[in-house]
Image 1 (cartoon, rainbow, N blue to C red):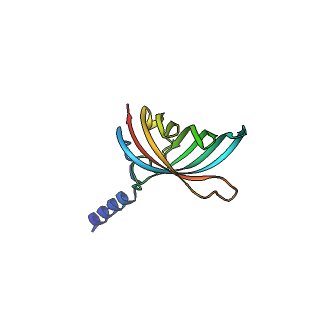
Image 2 (image 1 turned 45 degrees about the vertical axis):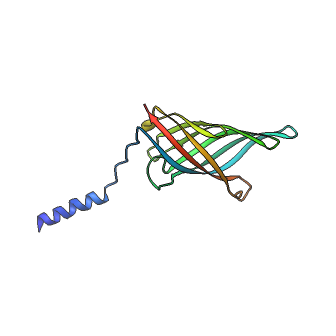
Image 3 (image 1 turned 30 degrees about the vertical axis):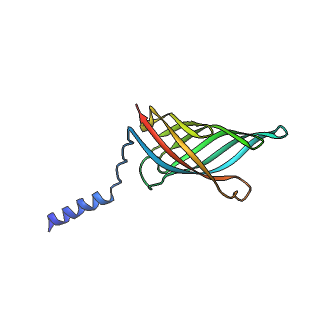
Length: 156
């Protein structure tokens, strides 16, 4: 009986112990969505052309519900130029995972460029093509979007 209780106790401890975080793959690919809410902080109007500085925050989730780029907080600063119908984007983002490790990227009109990070992401390089789906503005008028990313990377 004593050995049975010891076995059950060990099994229970194993089941409730926190799972060790999975190592971030040294190379790979992943698809993830980021849910952003924008905060335009400055705008200039040149009569037919505008420039806006935007501070945006959000949450990144791997589309599989687990794996790389899952459950990260994100903050980006970017500039959008609108000349007639043409929009141009340039910015920088920092994504932070549950461990506090960070991924830094820059982006333009079509893709993010992974340029480094801290902790498990130190030395990361890669790209993430993206597509934007606009949502209805939030109460108060802030733009909201879902951005789907398809990333490939390598950590050196």
